Image (cartoon, rainbow, N blue to C red; front, top):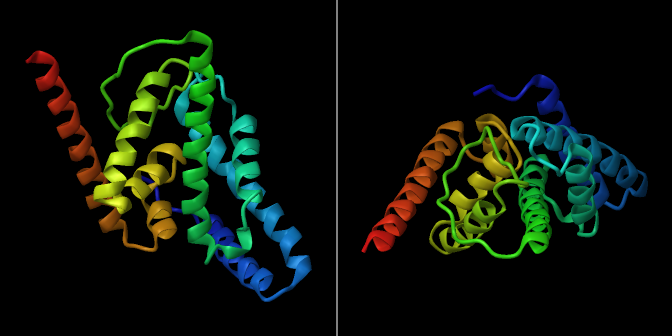
Length: 201
């Protein structure tokens, strides 16, 4: 996995500074915060869409705008720092992708549960809506057991962040992110095995 670039580190640092200035009441910092946040979201959405391949009918601009609307409708000034922004943006992207899949399914209706695996390289909403719903449902179950694992999945899988960016977003070490990613994948493998056992019984 690649590490974050010096440019990414500067953006995260600048987001942190702007968030602190907005909290201090500097109104001009708010416009700059939104401008910088928009650029960072565009980069994240582009990464996600490049990893998704051509079958994704939700494009970079659509994911970017929907995510930006979710974030701007909230209170960005309540974010602690640039890393916290990345984590919140990753969760917003998860919500946008799942909502998009729901709209796609509304046209088709029906379907059964699918096996879920975690693969950072691909997320095909158009062809795998049912898998995304299953993933979302299982993430809700996992959140009750280990919320941090869910945050790692949101950052890596939904936002397309690398290990270094995920570590910054979650204010932890890269080695912790790596361990959590292995644990999350193992948890999903266990869930899949349980479903196969139930289906075979």
